[in-house]
Image (tube, rainbow, N blue to C red; front, side):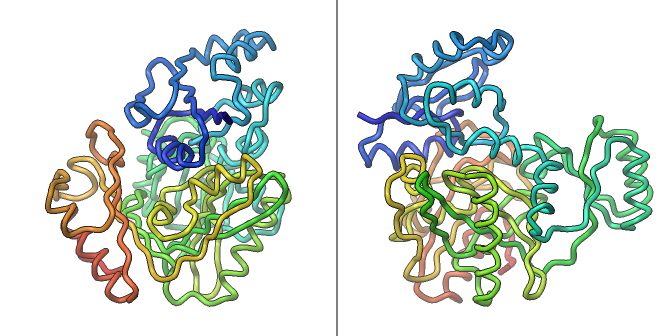
Length: 387
């Protein structure tokens, strides 16, 4: 039987495995000794390994031992970008690694990622790479306020990111922030946020899901709707063209997510994720091939599946207690199962702001779906925005 090894044991690994088991695949999950693994309980073999010791050794024999412990998989993939690239390169001596190590290297570091986008003439917010506070001040002098400052690594869900609206904010950042480097971005006045999720197989076949509109609060995705309402065909084509450039440049295999700012008819690419993505969770219950299944199809070099839903689809995230608002989300119960859409729980322990699950909702009428998503948002967080 074919085996896939996943580096990581979180909810994305869980959803990959749930989709892959239906395809006849077996799974193993590489996790470090202190890593939580409840998400992948009973879905495959958990291989606990001290990666620090492995990378310090660095020998071919050490990586071969790990390859054997993972069950000699036909392919290795990732559920997160914060993975040591030397680990991927070491394992690539023995089996296919998708996305390839260079793709992860480019996209796990904001400065390299921004420079990649610029090299490919893919539009982004104006930015500067800053190694010192003097560099940050120089960017401030050029861009003005507000500014967005992001650590080049380990930044997600609003972590390790700073919004600078005043000189006092800038001074506070200089006093309290960890050492750089950082990416400093000029403020973008955008209409909304959207993401494109596409997949490319090892043979070069590509597919794209519709652009998805996303609502964030304090950097954390709250809900998504697809296809993104009232976006023109040119915008969709431009987004797909940008991703095709990335696929070709990186020789990319697997699912890639591209988060964008929509500015009128233009798109500015904000971030890339070399993996399945939260804004694509709606694909699980859309009557099409989900992003998780298409990722597996791509890395196994199987034909890719249908990505075009027959009507509007949406998703609302379920975050941990005392999250982003003054309202405390209700714990899931029978009422959710009766009046919500399709409920997905990740088997994770509660923690403030942590993604514990999501609800997928569908309706043939866009306006009705928007109302349903807003109502679910309000039930969870006391919010009522319709965008």
